[in-house]
Image (cartoon, rainbow, N blue to C red; front, side, top):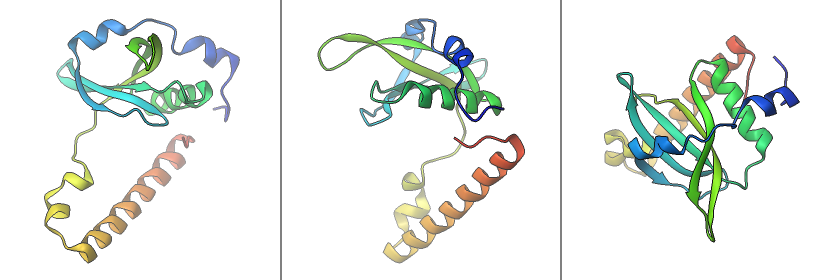
Length: 146
């Protein structure tokens, strides 16, 4: 697999208007961060999906790279553009629809909430190690790292 985004990739992703998906979606978060504008979810075919609406501050090639990586591990459902309000007007934002993974946030977990400061640091270190192991596993088995 190419390590870069190609002109063919630019013609493949983020073409269709998928704004209609928002009508069935529940908003999980307003991100308004560097990369993500908002996150939505809805049930689909007996499972849940996540739609990540990408900030316009994000490089288009970075967004395509994320879509390619999700596609490679079979978690990409679709990409497109959604109409949303920006600071001054309504614009089309890139959006990625992906499989929703089960689990809970580290910071929402009972173990974290009940831990003292030292235990929280130890838990965080353990989580970081597990994340690194999983990233290494995916990178080595699929040839991707995004």
